[in-house]
Every structure is written in structure tokens, then in C-alpha cells.
Image (cartoon, rainbow, N blue to C red; front, side, top):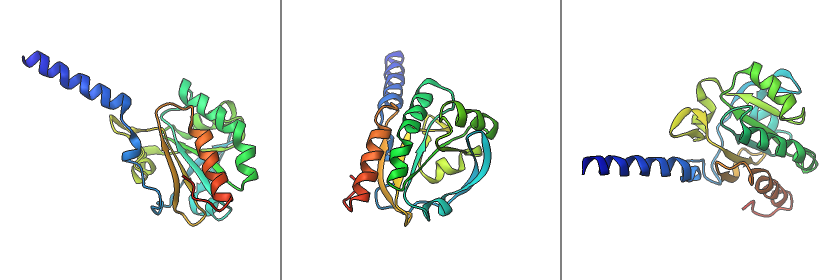
Length: 185
């Protein structure tokens, strides 16, 4: 009986880690976003990224991803790179965040992001914690959560899924709705 109970507990934990909706832990629509600045890279060049400064130019699509150069994260970066001109045309800036070091992100910004958008280093998972975007089974790694943030620093839209497939499409629709003066969801 103990073995069966332990086995069920392990199965339940595994199911939760694979299928749980991280959106429940994410910042809510309407919440004020925490400001931050950190090292980032775009087109292989390091620079200081400031959320406040970037928001002064328009909305920000802030997406968290687990680890550079993994298959899902590379696919998601390629998708955001392809859509960056559409985001830019709407006045939005895309930035990815992970716990990777800046040297890794310099390479990732060229190879996966195709020089189109910045990726920010979150050493110590400080930003992930501020945004409730840490992977609960591995808190030093980001969950896959995308936020659309208004220029006023409010969460307009949140999408959370371990699959990279719908993040770009959903955040682009949210920015389009914001631009049209409609609610983002």
C-alpha cells in the first residue's frame, strides 16, 4: 500500500509539472508590472535593458523561456523573430528573459533571435520571481510565460504554456487589440 501511495504521489507530481497551468501563478491582467533593468543582448551585442525606458516607446511583449538553445526555446525565438516586424509596426517591443548568462545570450540573439529582438539575462532568477514566472519544479529556470505590458506598465495579456506554439500568435493578437483600443483578451 505504501508503494502504491508513493507511486500515485509521484505520478500526481509529474502530471502537475507537465500539465499544470502556470498562468495561475503569473501576474494577473491589470496588475502593475515590476520595473527592472538587466544585461541583455541583441544582434550579438550586450547592452543594459530597462523596462521603464522601453515602455516609454510603446507596449512590451515580455516573454520568459526556460533555456537558450533548447528545441522549444529556439523554436519560440524563431517565431518571435519572424513576427518582430509585425510587433514593431504596432509600436511594440519584444524581449525574452531567461536565466542564461550574457555570453550565451549574445550567441542566442544572433542564431535563434536572428538579430531581431533582445534577450535579457536573469542571473539569480530575480526577474522571474518578480513576475511569478519561475518554473515551480525548478525555480532557477523560467517557465514559458508571455506578458503583453501597456506603456503605463500594466499587464494587458498573459499567456502561459510549456508549448512554444501559441505564444507569438496570442501576444500579437493582444497587441493588435490594444492598438485598436479594445481589451487585449
